[in-house]
Every structure is written in C-alpha cells, then in structure tokens.
Image (tube, rainbow, N blue to C red):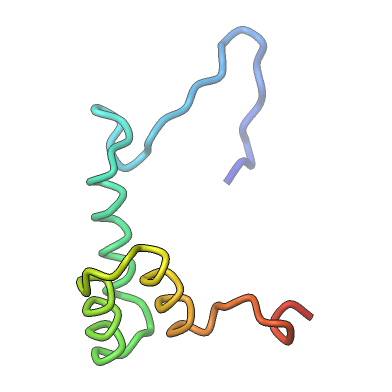
Length: 82
C-alpha cells in the first residue's frame, strides 16, 4: 500500500478516513463497513443468527464479549497461547 509514497517535510501529517473523506470518521460508517464484511464472511447463517442473538440478549457487555470470543474460538486459553 505504501509503495510509491515518498515522505515530505513540506506538508504536515494528517489522518483521513478513506470510506468517507468529506465528513471523516464516524462510528456509523465504521459499523456499516464491518456489517458488510461480516455478511460476506465465511460464517454460516446459523452462526450469524446465534451471534446476533447473543449481542441482543441484554447481558452485560463483558459477558457478550466472552460469549462472542468463545463462539469464534478466540479465547486466550493456555493451548492457544502456546
């Protein structure tokens, strides 16, 4: 991605949100991009439904995150860490 980019001392560095350069970053646009990528992911329909149900359960967020990581096999267990 950075091939062909030459740093310059003449201009100050700046951040830009590529999906929406006019208004800049917003949680809404970030969420929409993540939703689109999730819908095209390799998860089965039943798995997506289960994850959606988990997030809408009303449980505390730390419980939801734990369940989400457990469901996707992303818990930092001893075997996973080794």
